[in-house]
Image 1: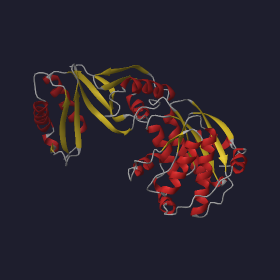
Image 2 (image 1 turned 90 degrees about the vertical axis):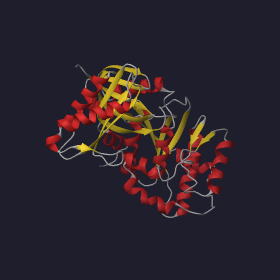
Image 3 (image 1 turned 180 degrees about the horizontal axis):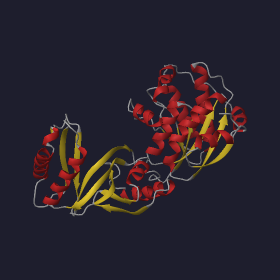
Image 4 (image 1 turned 120 degrees about the horizontal axis):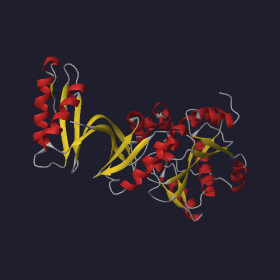
Length: 370
């Protein structure tokens, strides 16, 4: 029995009608990451990537949005005997001594029930691994999941699987927007903006030079998802005291003015009703609308799930700072146009070629010691 290995991409429920966009993004990220591939094609509701190095290719692809999970899987024909034989072979190699395993088969079955495959493969594995004491687990209690997905013609038996990041494919909205990264919360907002399919420009704002290292590390986790090998970043210095809630609100309001000045159409605001007062958010929206721009609130529907994205960006350890930001103040500090004009004079643009030394390259361009 001959089998072929593929990187199998499972679009999430929001992207099943956007598979051509996802295929386009997969090709882009593989080229950016210098991963050679022979083909990227569709088989029913899944995408198959025939790659020279499936491990590195799957890691690169899993930076994208619009994906439920990414697997490295063996492909055989959608035939009962071939499927059972391949699941038994894969299971025999993956299951360790004393482990509980679960065989799950989903998709399009031809002349048999998926349950029949699960039972037959489970029986074969028990027999093959009897000396190791491996035995079937349950849906809620198992050590290894042996997952198989069936399309009309083929079966894909997973060897390795990794959870995707959700969202929808980048640029699927066909709208350009601008966002600012200036702390952990704004980083999540920027991440969510990209996750929601907007073509996103990033501005990094800071009050003290000591903030630059952390902000640069955070931005470095975001920019690979923009799907460009060269990315222009803008850094703007705001001379605002970093202590106290009022100064923080002044800081945020100043950044909103900067975004309004730089935006052509859409402005992404890092404002959540869970953190900021309704008065502060209403005032920010009013500013954007009066400038004849359209506001986006990526965090408006995000609750504590934002902590999962914080972990993805490596900011979860510093997210306790959020507790100090949460306030019930209705105060909206005023920011004049002259102040904004003065702040904009500190703007510095940097062109980054994506690679392993992004953080050092950015800091070197800013003339920072690190």
